[in-house]
Figure 1 (cartoon, rainbow, N blue to C red):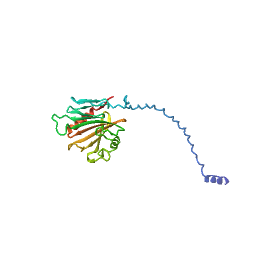
Figure 2 (figure 1 turned 90 degrees about the vertical axis):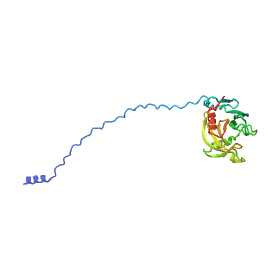
Figure 3 (figure 1 turned 30 degrees about the vertical axis):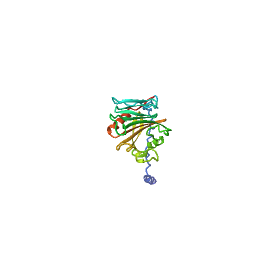
Figure 4 (figure 1 turned 45 degrees about the horizontal axis):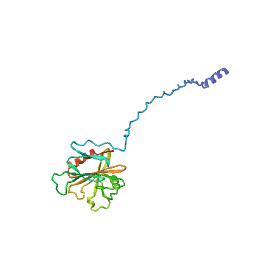
Length: 232
């Protein structure tokens, strides 16, 4: 009887839990860093080497066939001009070109191109520089936007005859030159314009101007500007 009870009690006990074996994972393989890739050095971008004498602008363009040439060694420049012009006035700092007239008429040969060299400290007390612009005024013109206007000198009489408007710059002998124009210059026939180009260097201002009425005259001036060059 006791044996039967013992068997019945054993049947009522819970079965022992079965524990599954835990799989042991092999350690992950160590990943070594890749060999560094050699990077080819970046080639340097070449830059323009300075000229032998950076202070001397390059020479001007070839003058049209048949043109004459003026070399002003004292002021350090040369320029070509058409055969229909001649040098009609010479001053220490200025050269003035007139249109040749077969038969003189009116008030004499029309003035065309002029070149004046203005030292940076010039005041023109002796009136030796033709169509003088004060150097400080030239710098004020340089500060203007294209299309803005300024009087040639402060407090001038009849300002409508001395007002210049800034035009786009142009290159002259390798320099970026300031360009201004007066549409009503003093004591000139109606329709005359005075276009003035300034090359501003450390020591001097080279002023090259032109009185013109026609596109053909203006084109001759542009060709003269293309021929302008500095000489030792």
